[in-house]
Length: 200
Image (tube, rainbow, N blue to C red; front, side, top):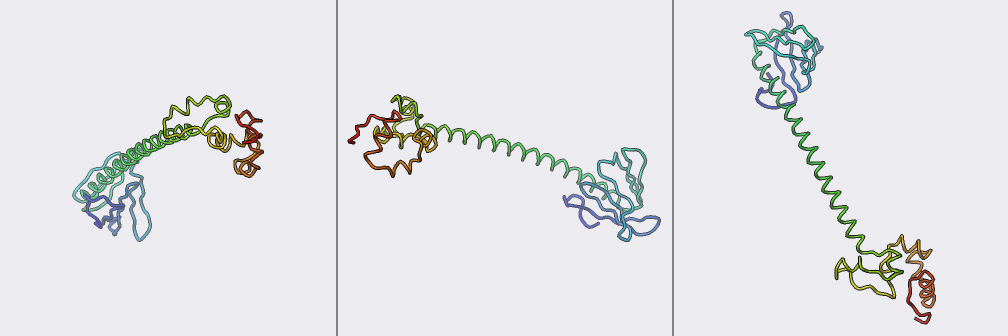
């Protein structure tokens, strides 16, 4: 036997015989395989096994589909222990996978909640075009002093998002910044984002 049955390993190897000739039984989490001279003589998935019975010189597997598979070996009890251990390993793997899936789902839920909170926080940093046009800063001011006071002269560049600014003004904030100083108030007034005097 290549490994002790009380240790969880990828597979166990056991000495046995087929018609009096040496063979090897391999027990994995998925199957039992009987090898002789490197050739697979018997192979069954673990889920195909209904039960097994151990004798002093053999182990007999009873199949779900009916029938039995008997293997001559003096390591029947160790093989049984290995099968039980692998079954425990499969159950533990399923538990671990379920726990991981639940942990991943919880982490994803928390990440989504944090994202929504961040989005809500980010939204408070900006005003809509209508809010700037009407001077209704109630929502913005409700966010607290950390927002800073509204700079009436620069409210469009200060409080419109880049996307909204471009939609309203027909140019980016960068392009607007390059306009001549005398032209900026006129452009803003045209969109109702004054009050400015042309000589500002």
